[in-house]
Every structure is written in C-alpha cells, then in structure tokens.
Image (tube, rainbow, N blue to C red; front, top):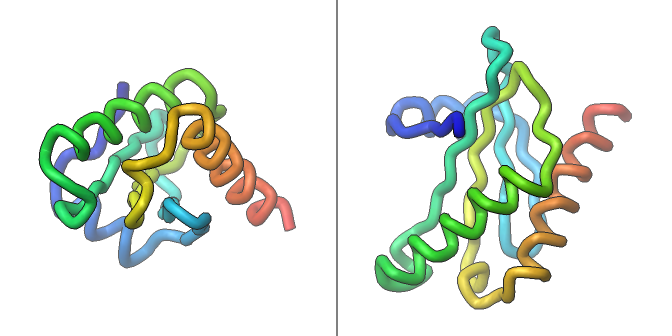
Amino acid sequence: MHRLKKNKEFNYIYKKGERVSTEHFTLFVVKSKYENYKIGFSVSKKLGKANKRNKLKRRLREITRRYVKIMPFRNYVLLAKEGAQEIDFILLREEIVNLFKKYEKKKVL
C-alpha cells in the first residue's frame, strides 16, 4: 500500500489540501504529479491508548484498500475525530465510503 509516513508530507496536505468532513472523519486531498496515490491516517492520542488507535488505523487501512475506489494523482490524509474509535466496522465502512464519494461529488460540481 502507498502510505504517507513523513510529518512534512502530512503538514503539506493539511495546508494545501481540500477538505471534506463527516461526523467522525475529515479527509484532506491534494493533487500530486505522480500517478500512484499516497494515503496517510492520523489518529490523535486523545482517542485512546495505543491499542485503540492502532485498531482504528488497521480498520481504516483495510476499508480504503478493499472498499474505496481511490483516484490516481492524489495524496490523501484521513483524520479521525473523537468518537471514531467506538464505531463498529460496518458503520465505519459506510462513513469512509460516503466520505470519499462526497469528495468525488464535490470535484464534479
């Protein structure tokens, strides 16, 4: 999987990226000159101890890998808000899929 890992990459996307939000997540997207996409997951320490944060990140990686059609030439950061760690997998999947669809609709308009 193509993942963002460096802090400066995250900060660049936060500053320059377009933003789309739902109740538990915010998606930042910025155009890239490379065909391969990159995606990063940001889960604050406010959301719980390491095991809860890691579980949420594992779920998010699996959802984006399996259920989301990700556009090329883009870099993404998926930011988890408070309460995201307590959602069950099916609701989490629906919210993430709807978030990416919301961004695609925004780009069409």
